[in-house]
Image (cartoon, rainbow, N blue to C red; front, side):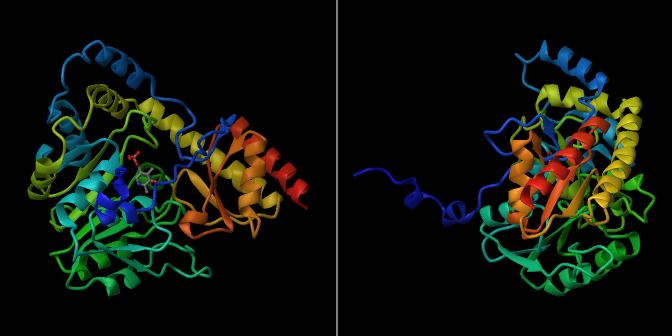
Length: 370
Ligand SMILES: *Cc1c(COP(=O)(O)O)cnc(C)c1O
């Protein structure tokens, strides 16, 4: 008799669909526009700090990371006790699930929302309640319809997940909508606002709220942030949650004691101070978005409004084939079949020459498919 782990495991583990990373496994593309990373490389200051921290990796990291938390507390005008560090903000999302979700409880999120909400909900054995998104004709198509989400909140609901801005659509919820939602949802329900792309949104010239400013008013609010996107540290895994101190104390109980490694802590703190990198990353994104929009427009391809560092473009019925043909030409973008948007592709803003390579490859791939 052989051991079958699939029979012994918790049913939730077997039922959980695996996370599909943006970059396809085996292929090594020349141009990486599939995972919303910054194209500029890591911030110079973060690299220096990481190198220095490497010399001390025989020691355990600081478990409560006072230096990084002090810097983050100053940045967000919160107390250090309101901050929970994670191995990426993914871990912060998982901590929310581990603390607040369980069989018999429900999590509400929007259709097409970030895949991790479904995964952490399933692993916890909780029941997903998936809200219908904005319709295609809406100003922010396929984005989170907060009124529809509020209607799904019931007596069993423990957590609501909102990505603002949203991945993969790039859309956002404005200040009035989000505030109304927080006022509508019963205060016994945890509302997570995932702000992985907040820095880009704040620059986009739109009505974009940093929900962290409402933490005092709404003790049930959890805001997550990451060093993976604008700050260029995706490979080091550093993110965090901002919440009430009481909620953070619960996250602190269930997290692994050394979940934020010492190199990541040092690099993250240095990245926060690298204003030059931040300016360059935002400027590169602004120019790149304009370049991509113009190029896609010239090819007759529409894209959704975005507040982030990527565009969700309508590629039509053969979007997946197109994605494969682009990869064959060395350019990786993200197919969105598993996000329920099979006719769309998500393309991250790259450097000027990467965007150019993508647009040229796209023109050739469209020709090839015609
Ligand atoms: C990329 C992304 C994250 C960040 O994940 P990390 O674990 O911090 O790398 C979180 N939420 C959304 C919506 C994202 O797109």
